[in-house]
Length: 118
Image (cartoon, rainbow, N blue to C red; front, side, top):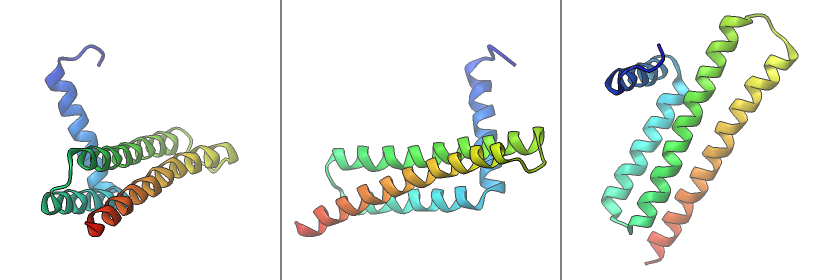
């Protein structure tokens, strides 16, 4: 599997995103939230810095959720039984998604405050 051509690696990545869309309701919800952000940005037409900040946050939240999904799938496959260390690993990954989500919401609120004060 190593050293595959670029187009094959892109296909593998798209398969991963598709699998997450199919199986993870939280990923679907986060994609919907990202779509709402893009629609708001398109309607509001803010400066490019807001586009960059908000899209970066959306990308980080979605990427974190993909990492979380990958970790959970791997752990559940390798060690399906409950174990305290596995719980910590899963909880930490979910915590990372939560922290990035809170950060993204905070940046979006800052954008809305600035936009509606104009």
